[in-house]
Image (cartoon, rainbow, N blue to C red):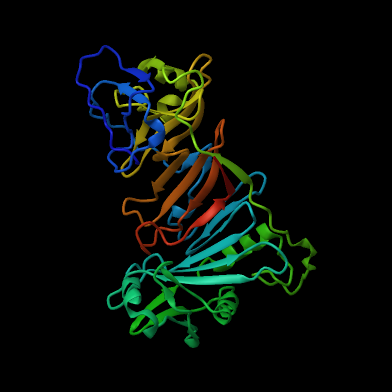
Length: 423
């Protein structure tokens, strides 16, 4: 989404030819219009047919990658429990009615609750965050969606003059901390968090009030989500468990410690070739399509647009490796491009990174997909260039599709890294 340099070559070529030369600064963009160019592709020339009208294909499920369902939290599961946990228990995602939990690879768990699914007039969400470890506390935040008389936009205008109040079973637990316009939410006090944790394990009426408006957070599914977090962090039966079990209390020795995020070495791509400034990469687009097709088990379904006449985008990564991108699929409100790392000479050894890319800029590949057309829930995955390959650096969703705001309510990562820049 970073470039606006589309090439519309109307010459009647028998086949498209991809040429990379050091003296040219034009290249094609499979993502459509945008405003920023990528300086690392300044040495690329691409000649191709004019873009054809894309053929209609059956809608592809955008929430499948590497045979794993990535977005169970986007399904409106009002009566069914849904859980995905990696084989090595590195992360977990779980949804029960109006609550969900996402735990990442550092063992931090985030629990998000919403209004009942049939109450779209006053959307609201509460986020509870607990890190791993015996002495880890719980932080809480609240985010309000639109309403008749008051909204999060009104909160920004009101500033400190009015704050959100929490009521549990009609008992007033006071005001939250001041609303943060930058963060788009208000932090709960520790007393409010403690009261919520106790209330959510049983049937409770949870209300947030601002002036004359009321938002009600559902308690349905909360205890199941809390138990899943306890299981993931090794807290079941311990004094710090969300869900207490007085009959079987274990010592805190079973509680898992936090894990360090993997360190990722991020290398900025270089536009220079090893041999000389005149080094070129020339290949017909049909040959390149055939070359990368072998990296996919079911290319016709995974990347049905691979062989159409839409443009390729080629970016140099270093003196001998390139990033090749081509549109793979489109659905009602999402699309995805294939991204491959290839050598600029034989053996080309193409390596698939993803078939769901939506953006690339300066060594960072991104996939952002909507959970539904209005865009109130999203998934995101990032990959960074490490000098020889792209490695996943981040994976998250924004929570359930509950109309909190466009772009989703929260960031609920299941995979995080510590990124160190190498120049």
